Length: 103
Image (cartoon, rainbow, N blue to C red; front, side, top):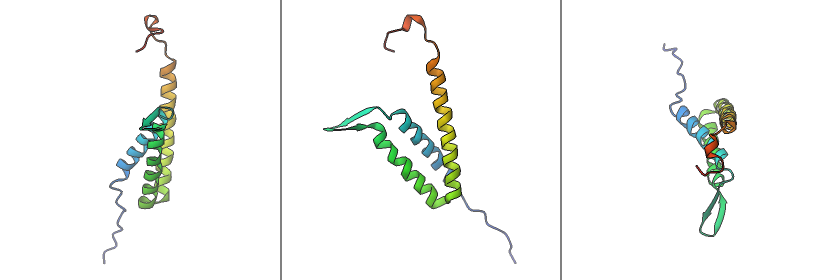
C-alpha cells in the first residue's frame, strides 16, 4: 500500500507573487502621473491598479487563502521597505552645483 502524501505543487506561486509585488510598486510610484489617451485623462496607476486585484484573486483562487495572505503580507513589507528607501534616498543632500537645475 502506498501511503505517500503528495505535496501541492506551487509551480507558479513565486513568479505570480513577484509580479504582484512589482505591479503594487508600479502603482505606488505612478499614482499621481497623469496620462492622456485621446480626450480621456487618467493616472497611470488607474491602469495598473486593477492588475493588483486580478493577480490577488488569481493567487487566492488557485493557491488558497493562506498562500494569498502570505503574499499580501510580503507585498506590504516590500512596499514599506521601498517607501522607506525612497524617503531616505530623497532626503540625501545633492551637490550644491545642481540646485535648481533639471537632472
